[in-house]
Structures are given as C-alpha cells and as structure tokens.
Length: 402
Length: 75
Image 1 (cartoon, rainbow over the protein chains, first blue to last red):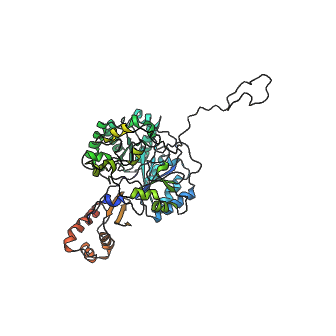
Image 2 (cartoon, each protein chain N blue to C red):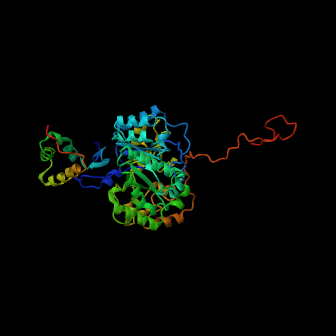
Image 3 (cartoon, rainbow over the protein chains, first blue to last red):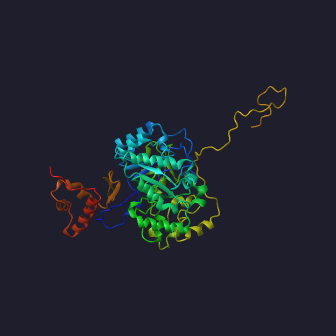
C-alpha cells in the first residue's frame, strides 16, 4: 500500500484567495500520484488498501510503464509514490526507478523492506531523486506482526538499519495508526530518530482488506484526540500525507493542504493501468479510465467525467451547517464510501461525533472492494489419494463429484 | 516549476517541499529574477506597484527560506 502527498505548503501569498479553493477545482496535472506497480506481495497485511497478494496477469509491462513515465514527464508531475503490493518484487523495479528519475519524475516508494539489502540501500543512498518509505505498523514485533504478519517487524528493522548504514538520511518510517499502536507514538519517533529517518503517520482506511478489520483497528475517539495533540506538538517534523485533515475539526489545522485531493491534485494508477480518483478507493465507482486507453493517462486526467465531477465545487451536503466544515471539509471520501456513508455527509471518524451517529443510521451493507488479489487461503487437495469407488472400477474419475 | 491556471507550483527535489505561486505576476517576477540586478527591479519590470512591494518581498523571502530561490553567486 502507499499513501499520497506529503506537501508542506510554503506558499508565498502575494494574492488573496485560499489555495485550497484553487486546488478544489483541480490542477492541469497531478502534483504527485500513487502508482501501484504490482498486486504481488510477500505479505498479507490484514488492512491492505489494495487487497494485494497475487500478481495480476494483466499488469503493465516494462515498456508500458515506461510510456506512462514519458507521459508523466510531459505533464510535469513532480513525483510518483510507488507502491503495490510490494513493488520491489517486480524484476524490472530498479530499471523503472532509474527510468523515472532520468526522465525528471521523482520517485518515492513504499516497501516492507524485503528486498532492501545493503547493496540496494547503497544504491538508494546515492540518488537525490529517490525516497523510501519503510512500512511498520507496530513499534514492537507483537503489535506489528499481528497486522503485517510474522517476521515483518524484523524485516523492516533490518531494512532500516541497511539504509542508515549506507548513509541514507531522512528516509521515511511509515506507520498506519491503529487502536493498538497509538500508545506507541513516542516509540515510533524513537525508532525513526535511531535510524536518522523521518516519521510518517497515516490514517487507517476501511479500504481493501481494511474494510474487514476497520471496526477492530480504527482509533477510539479519545485516541484520536491524543493523536491530534501529538501531531500538533510535533508540527512539521512528522509527516502525515495530509491524511488526518478530519482531525482539524478539533481546532487549529494540521500542517498540509487539509483537502481531499482525489482527482484534483492526486490519483492512483493500479498495476493493470486502471486510473482511480484516490489511492484509497480501488472500486469501480471511482474508476476514471485506463492508461491503455487511447490518449493514455493525460486524457484520463484531463477529460474523465468522474474527475470533472470531483472538481466541481462541493456543497458540503449534510456537513454544510457544521461550524467545523471549513476545517475538515467533510473528511475522507474513501472512509465514507467503504463504511456505507453518503459522500456528502460526515466522515465515519468525525471528531464532532456526527460520524458515529451516521454509522448507526446506515441500513445497507457497505460496498465491497471490486478488486481482490489476496493470497488464496484454500487448503490444497490436489494429489490426495482416494481409494477406488469399487474394487473393479478402472475409470480414475469414478465416484468423483465436482 | 510548473505553470498552473492560478500561477505556478514549485517542487524542490532536495528538500522535497512544494511551494506555490499564487498569481501570474509573482510567476513573472520569479522567472525574471536572473535577468535583473535586484528583486526590486524584477518587481518593477513586472508592473508591481510601490504599495504591493512589501507583499512581494514577503513572498520572495518565503521562497528564499525554503531554498526555492537563492542569492546568485558572483561569477
């Protein structure tokens, strides 16, 4: 999984007008976009946004990926957030990273660290245009491995020590905040400091397999307050990918754009080339087109009816009358969608409490992800010897019912 | 630097920070800085009035703080 933008807007303001209002209407090209390179992953994290596990046979070829990069260069997209799946398991991963940076498209990639050996770390440390996010969802192995799988804490720690050993300063330690790891905020900061990394905290979304565990993992209301206060205290030292703007309704806004960028400043390209409005919304409802369509990514970004509708000024819907609407702007579209809430109403984790009330009123089942590449958990039965159904039976399929 | 309908976006690969130019005139000023002896001269050439100068000075200072622009080195 990957998250979006870590924008620290240092906006020289020589004109009136709020920047978020300008961004609301969309940009000529995304500032950055998330690109899931493969659905293949060595892990099976319980909250995976993209329900990854198995490679999809229709995934973009190396040549097709390079053509996408050419388009991004032409559109002057500053950088791509590469994720998956586990992007580094693609055999052409390093080739594509080199191609992107040679074509002025910066790369930030998310990894669980499985392929970050000392040689890879040295290679990364030597590049100014590549940044790395190592995912870790528990400061301790027990909390992390319960979500990301056995051994994954050790893998991530080993990868980070390789990066630090190679002299890579300021790579990102990326953490999805859960009920179980919010008490470990200070420990995460200490781990980041230990490796000379920067801490990046992001929001748990009920997307992909995350929908199945959201009720057990999402922070409790008092934990949201604790997280907000912690983020305010740490300011710009800690990145958030702009993912906690729903918490801005507690008071002052957190650093960042504080805006849902879906289809306006960000979007997602999935491994088979499908373009979605948002990295947390891999669902047909948010599918804008495919990079293999005539016109490619540029046409999808500029002409898709879905993106046009997302760029239309929003009315605020049920939230319009709330005094905090200007701070939180109704929260996260994907969080609402996958919990069955209307998109023009409150976020399920609305800090003013409107979300929990709205959740109780939901009468229909929440939409299920339309794409699932999870590792199959069907017990293998092939090769099990069966006795013949009758002593004289010669047909090997006798007695077999499919 | 990438032009946008409202001005421009700037991204610094070293600091990984994004900055914004919120109108076309500040974009013109930033683009022409190298061609003028001073920032004040660049502003004047872009049609920035005396009254607007403090706002433009603040904008350029913000860009300098975030290393988007830097003092030229004497050749």
